[in-house]
Amino acid sequence: MGYNIGIRLIEDFLARSGVGRCSDFRETAEVISKVGFKMFLGVSPTVAKWSPDSKEFSLLIDENPLAEFVELPDNVRGDLFYSNILCGVIRGALEMVQMQVETSFVTCSLKGDERTEIRVRLMKFLDEEVPVEDD
Amino acid sequence: MTIHNLYIFDRHGNLLFYHEWVRRKHTSMSKEEEAKLLYGMIFSLKSFVNRLSPTVSKEGFLSYKTSAYRLNFFETVSKLKLILNTDTETSQSEIRELLSGIYRDIYVEYAVKSPMVVPGEMITSNLFRTKLVQYVQSSHIYKAN
Image 1 (cartoon, each protein chain N blue to C red):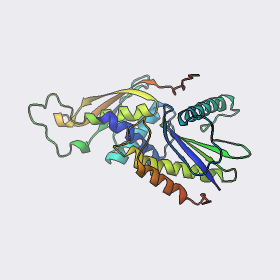
Image 2 (image 1 turned 120 degrees about the vertical axis):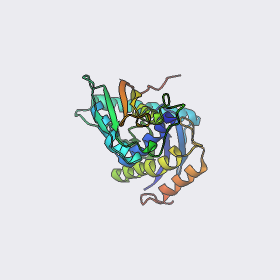
Image 3 (image 1 turned 90 degrees about the horizontal axis):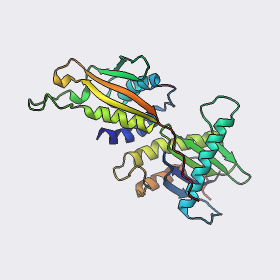
Image 4 (image 1 turned 180 degrees about the vertical axis):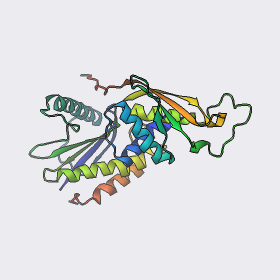
């Protein structure tokens, strides 16, 4: 679900923010947190916990607006990542700008952790598709 | 300042939209073939332009001009391509403004945000076409003729 949102959201984001192509993955992370999240959710997560090869980072969200008025019922509390839609959005949006990433939840404030953390890992850059010759 | 026609391609090369205002000469091929030819040419041009460029630059291929028309090219970070053929006199910066305006105010508003528009398929929405035509025709570089 998040993925489908992401692939459309990226166009809205690019049109409204007017940012150009990012030069590296670190810049991408900054743009996602400072511009993207700010534009759509009004919060600006912190970018932290970079891996040594600069291919993985975490987004630390203190106040998750999606979960602001939400309480999880007991029977799903252990299993449901309520805001997993955010992971899909990030994955979909980045795929549209030629980056294949894996996103996962590390902690979630609805499960009792103090803040929400999403881990983003760059798998590879996608190359532009070459049009097929069929004559 | 005449605007001839507009093509919109997605990141895979699928023709999403075509509209023509003033076109006096048509190719003898079908719409699909013409679109494929155009996309292939643009793809190759972009590649040559970047490889043969004497300076480092972010932009790359922007337009080409013949004695009869100018082809203007606009690509977003998400690899959506807008190709607009105009006459040779119109100012390039105004055309870029127009193209980025089409992307921001028409494509994002009426195509991306429309649940009826499926990514990768032709945009059949009448609202999109109407809004686009309205936007282009109200731009001051359009001349009604």
